Image 1 (cartoon, one colour):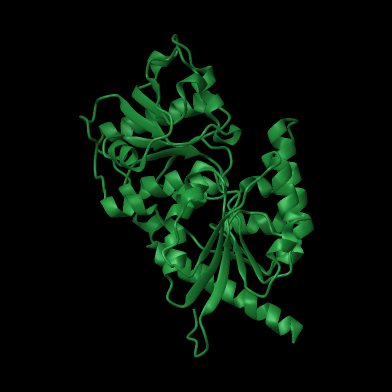
Image 2: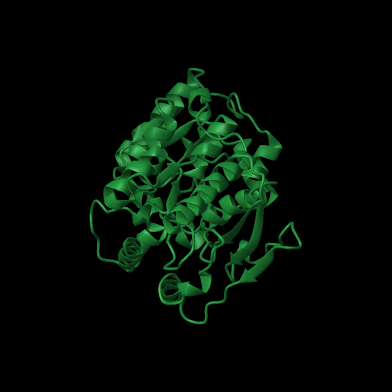
Length: 375
């Protein structure tokens, strides 16, 4: 951010729809860093009424924190907030929207896009979720002219967003994010297996139960074929009632794991299994690379971009392909192999202060562009 001789940049932060586990985790690391930037005064923070962020307390007494209540069903309320009711956010103070959808308001606006479902789908499937995502894409397209800048996490997301919305050409910026602060504090780094190299694998897939997380792929497992897999345990962070294959003895469903529980898990598992069919980023991939764990993940652009040639890939629609990848990992580990993620980590931001600084610089440029347009 450039040096200023005038007063610091004043900005507002909007995150009223951030309730999901992944986005909440990101904001719990990013929000304090945004507030701590010495060159910026955060004047207002708009919070969701539920979830971990609803109880956020600002580090600065001068910052006004507002919980935005939704009296209508969430989906309807969200549509109205981004359209008819967005004028409440009018003003000269720049606003950084951290929840994907631009607001139909008159203000210098920067939008942080984390949601891959805003991209044009490759295949349309009729479902409640498909309809919800279609509505989100309609709102995004209607409101995109109200924002001056957009921020994404990868070059793949950058290219895909512009391909879906060509009018965004020249407006999209890429800022990668490091692992969450809770993992940075522990400084955990692995260099080999916790168990003897010939033992069956201990795997983890930390993901909520969204359709694109692809837990359903495991539903093809049965007691008859499960013994063919060299797996001692696969931990899924979903409720046991959602177990895609409850008859398989080595699948363990834990529900959501706390930060300390994730650190404990990462210190003992043999690899991260990541099955998601689409992602804008994929935080568990970054976490696993930071810790030094092997990764099994889909052969898809988002994963290829992040993991390069160090991951073991499989076809996200094929259980037999996943089985082959797991067997391959077991063979490699038995030979003493362990991944080297240094090249992949070199392109990822080192800390959250660096991320906040880069984002706020874009917000500042967004404000300056609006001033130039009006002068």
